[in-house]
Length: 320
Image (tube, rainbow, N blue to C red):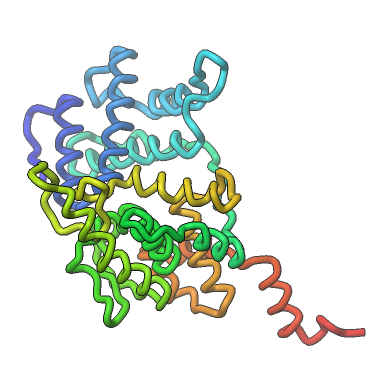
């Protein structure tokens, strides 16, 4: 826990807040990096306004920071920051000031009354089941990279895993016999995720005939330690960016244009399960959501499913 030292400069308080996020909250790496970027931008803004003393930060100054991000434009007049990016930055700023107030490092929290921009839900449209079949049908190559790419697509759709969870899998995390994965989600929380027959078969084929060939390419090259499930052509762990590119390329080949991303496959997995009658709390557990409300957003019931259930359940749906 932070000490209430005499040094309460802005840099010192930001460093203590960062330690709290890392150690006490155990924040996921990607989220932590986003908080750091946003708070560096906030500190730069304060410096531009000549504010060095954290006690002089007030609600109007924080609101001005938010407004600056909302109105920032590039050379062609386009917004530099999406509403979601502005909202996320305000969350980071609020976290910092709340921490300082609760730890009595500053007398109060000036961010409490600052309002952020309205953020559109931006929920991606799920693929239809026919589109998923078409997508999986375009990755048929039997070479090591093709076997890997097929397994990636099958696994993302079967498990609803996040891309970071998928590329973070080690071989010890996979139980092919029982069709189970142990994934490390946000906040370093572990959960067990089942996968179906198609995904198991694709993963088994890759592990038996694809991965050994790719790993053999390591030779004497230096690669990151670990026993990654998904590896690149040099035998090292596949990156999020490379996995994302694999998904996007397959989507283009399947005629989905720019619609496809790993997140769309995660959303499609959840939506199709709900459409087929899965309990939303089971889907919550599968996706690793801390809040049921998050799952309800991801698994918005399709209009067709809503109509079918209504017609079957409402006593006057077919009246007359």
